[in-house]
Amino acid sequence: MSNILTIAFKEFKSFIKNPTFYIMMTLLTLILSALFTMQLQRFFQMGAMAMMQPGAAGQANIHYAVFLNHLQILNLILIFIVPAITMRLFSEEKKLRTFDLLLTCPLKSYEIVIGKYIGALLALFVIFLIAFLYPLGTALFAKLNWAPLLIAFLGIYLIAAVYAAMNLFCSSLSESILISYVTSAILNIAVWFVSQAVEFADTQWARNFLEHISLSFHISGLIEGTIRTNSLIYFFSAIGLFLFLNERVVESHRWR
Image (tube, rainbow, N blue to C red; front, side):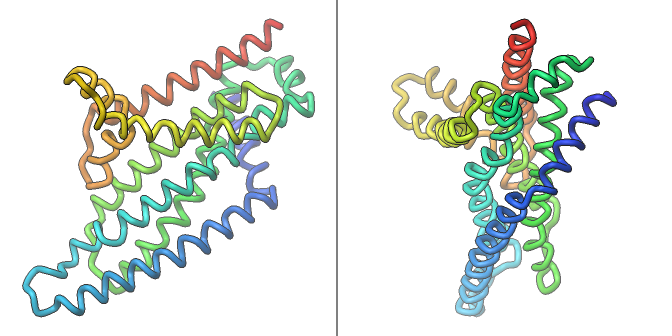
C-alpha cells in the first residue's frame, strides 16, 4: 500500500507543479464562472416573472434549473480535460525511457497502475473542488437541499473516474502523448453514443443490454439525488475492467 501511495502523491505533485495544470484550471474557472452566472441570472429572472404564480419558482427548482446544468457543463469539459491529465502518465514515461526504469524497481504492476490512477483522481478532485465553489457560493443567498447536490456531484465524479481509468489505459498503449490524448477523447465521446443506440434497438433484450452499459442511464438517478446499487456496481466494474487491462499492458512490458 505504501508503494501505491508513494506513486500517487508523486504523480499528484507533478500535476500541481506543472504550469499546464494551472492554465487548465484557469480556463475551467473562466468557463464555469461565465456559464454559471448566466444560468443563475436566468433562474432568478424566471423566478421574478413567475413570482405571482404559486410554486412556480420554488427554491427546489434551483437544483434542476442551475446545478444540474452546471454539472452537465462540467461533464462536457471533463471529456477533454481528463485525457489531458492522464495522457502523460504512461506515454511520457515511455517517451523519456523512464518507464523501463520504473519496471526495474521492486514494484508490482498493479501498484504502478493503481498509484498513477489515484494520482489522477487527486488531480480531478481539485477540479471538483473548484466546481463545487459555485453552488457553495449560492448557499449564501439561497436555501439549498444539500443531499441531492452532493449525490449529483458524486455521480459526475464517478463518471470522471471511469474516464480516468479508460484514458490511463489509452496512455499505456502508446509512446505518443498526442495519440494518447486523441484516442482518450474519442473513447470518452464514444461511450455516450451507447445511450443514443438505445433508441434504435429493435428487440427488448438489446434495449435492456444497451441501457445496462449506458453511462447516461446509470448517471440519471445519481444526478437527481438517488443512489442505486446497480449503478454503483456498473461504475466500479467499468473502472476495475480498464485498470485490469492497464495492469496487463504494464505486465506485458515487464516480460519483454
